[in-house]
Amino acid sequence: VVLSDFGVSMETTCEEAGIHSEEIVGVNEYRPPEVWRDDFGKKADMWSLGVVLYKIGSGFLPFNGQDETRLRKIIEKRLCTWKALHRQTPPEFVDLVQKLLVPDPKKRLSAAEALEHPFIQHVAPREQQDQTSGDRRGRGREGGRSAAAAAGGWLLLSEDDHKEAAAAAAAVGGRADSEDDY
Image (cartoon, rainbow, N blue to C red):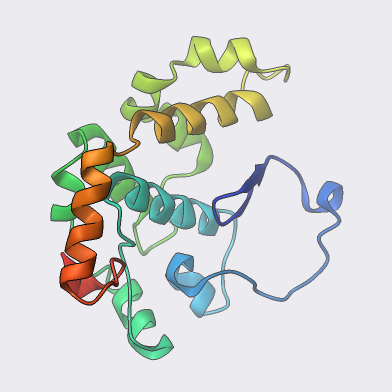
C-alpha cells in the first residue's frame, strides 16, 4: 500500500510502482518516528494512516510543533491529546487510531491487522471487502479501498462540527492544527 497524503492510495509493489528513489518525501506531521531515524519499513504507512484517521475524527492533526526538532520529539513520545478524538468518535475508532499511532513499528498494526480491527469490520465487514475484491486472496485493492472509504465516510464531521472547529480556530488566532488548540 502506498499512501500520499489524503488523495492517493493503491496496493502495489515497489517494482510495479517504479519506485527506486531512496529520498524521503511527505509532510513532517505525518512522518512516523522510524522515518526520522531513517530505519523504516511498510508499517510507516500505517502510522501515516493513523494521523489521517485522527484528523478525520477530530478535525485536528495529532502532532504539531513549531519547528522540526520540536515536532520530532512530540511524535517520538506520541504526545497528542486523545480527548479531541474521544469527543466525536466511537471507542472502537479511537482504539484503531491508537493502535496505528504506536511509536514502535513492531507493535503497530500492519495493514492486514488493521483490516481485521473491530471498527473496520463494523463499517466494512469482510464480506463487503471480499465482494468488491477482484483479488483471488479475497482482500485485494478494492476491498482495502472500500474499508478505508467506509471508515472515512462514516466519520465525516457534521456541518455544526465544522463551524465549531472554525470558531475555535478563530478564537486562538485562526490556526486549528496547533496542539494548543485542544
